[in-house]
Length: 199
Ligand code: GDP
Picture 1 (cartoon, rainbow, N blue to C red):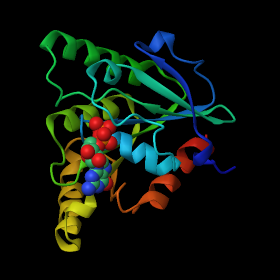
Picture 2 (tube, protein in one colour; picture 1 turned 135 degrees about the vertical axis):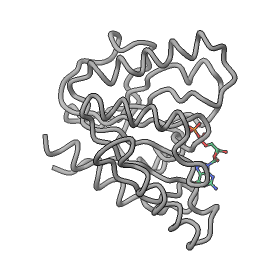
Picture 3 (cartoon, protein in one colour; picture 1 turned 90 degrees about the vertical axis):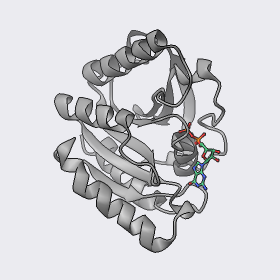
Picture 4 (tube, protein in one colour; picture 1 turned 60 degrees about the horizontal axis):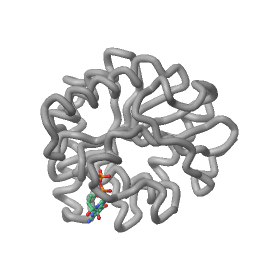
């Protein structure tokens, strides 16, 4: 079975896990600090200009968005926080919902963690990696906006991240990605396919 990522369609937007679509089949979640490039990565992988909203309205970022790939397969856009200027109480609430989602979702096969390759492994990223490690969830990192760096520095950023990763998650993987230049898309799709189809 291969996934037709281009066929992704919006399924549901929910504020809490208990309101999510049925927990059946398989899904992969995308996470990333606000502005890291998560929506652009989702749009590039699905070849859809506006599947995930790239706008920064705080109301939207609190929702967990589900996209249907058919055959009970889904992509999930998790709220990104860390950059948005929101009160501490609200931020703590989002963190609670995120952690809850990672803990209870049985169909969750892996997490794609999107980081700006120029500012990787922020506090948000480290927390996500630790949560995933604690629940035994696989993580694949997209070091995006790779087009902003020359080949040498981009490669160095990848190596530096790979070197530091074991401190946060024992077997997380990382790759370079650019939604703008459309690089790294096949590599990312391969990971998604493996997670969604071999379960
Ligand atoms: P999100 O908040 O993580 O969903 O981030 P967005 O996808 O909305 O992207 C944030 C900003 O980074 C936007 O201005 C995008 O145009 C820009 N951006 C995202 N991906 C890339 C990329 O691969 N290359 C470049 N140069 N800019 C990007």
